Length: 194
Ligand SMILES: [Fe+2]
Image (cartoon, rainbow, N blue to C red):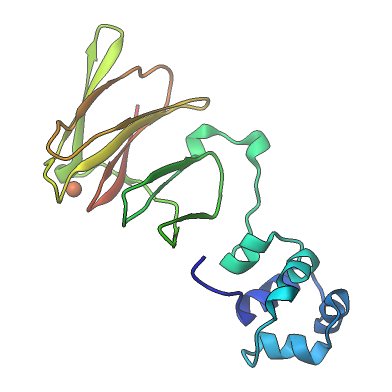
């Protein structure tokens, strides 16, 4: 986690819970003046208060620290709305079926937003027996390469890791409707509907 809880976060979450400063203060055993100080950047809550503060605001400690409220609706999650996160330092690839606070190498990673394939990142899909042969027309040098290809349908994901100086191609079983994703280490995530 790269930040401590901020006054802005406390204020936003308190207002979301429709609590007054006095009501929040009472729940965690401080004065309303103390809450006011936190919210106006004139002080920060002691670390021992973070857990009760998160409880009073109805969120988890990690969400409080991150300043983000995550509503997890995984019960009805559709894999088509899954998210990819890639660490810019170590290249770690993380896949999640719903929103999450993901941190790698000390950095909180944003969910990647996929763009439509462009001329420098075009993809070809050919039928080969019962599989599909995927080729991304892109360099595979050490500095600029396709790091993975994934095919996501409503109930499953196939992910293939690719490596610099290898080929930007793989075979996948493209069963059903889904979405092909591929990631360039310099230009980000691309997708193509199948
Ligand atoms: Fe690229």
